[in-house]
Length: 215
Image (tube, rainbow, N blue to C red):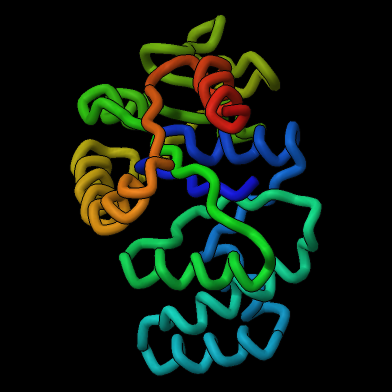
């Protein structure tokens, strides 16, 4: 099973990808993570990418294609792939088709976690964590049992991410829409696009994804 999982930051895409890895043995292929790992490991494609970045240039589609090709080869035939952050253009979508074909694979589903922008702003801007143990809380949905005291470790120190503010969240949403708009028509024409409510309970989202993969 090979899928593309779409959704803006805060939609829960990372959580769902992790569950798919744990429950179905799939592998999340994040182009950003793969690029950093290749550069750190000093692989041939990593060295190529490093030289491009050191010149202040954007990594080309060709280099990204090489990364994905190498990852699929290393995975073998047993595990399915979850593509995250790629493709972002129609050209990349066509390129992915070719890479998958080389490994005897096809793209089965494109799943988009739909969100309500105002609700997503509330979800993200209300987040805070324990500065000591990292336990997560929310102004509205999950306050500590005792105000100002972490349920997990008892610390009274909390922190918020500086980019968890309304302006940043709405900018991320606009960027997401701009990046996904070019590829959705490609896959809609094939009838493989599915949209589910990303604002639903985490387990409900997982169940909806499982039903799509079973279809």
